[in-house]
Length: 84
Image 1 (cartoon, helix red, strand yellow):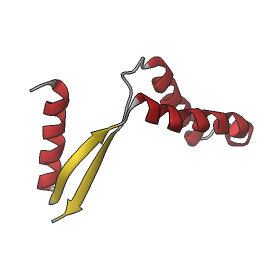
Image 2: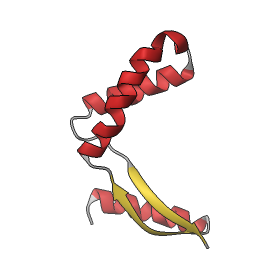
Image 3: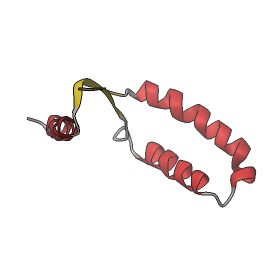
Image 4: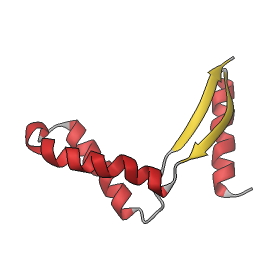
């Protein structure tokens, strides 16, 4: 079992304890991440002056920094869950 599979097994076990059923998950692709982060970054540049000093701006800057510095190691895992 590779690290990703081990990580996913742990999450699915946690969801099961919380009485959720997880039929699957999907990792995002680099293209999908670019489609999310490029417009986000452009919009953030326009709004920076209006939201300076807010937690939202700090969080978005941190996420964008991780995206740019991650060299393909940054991503999201999407879970499909249903309540039992």
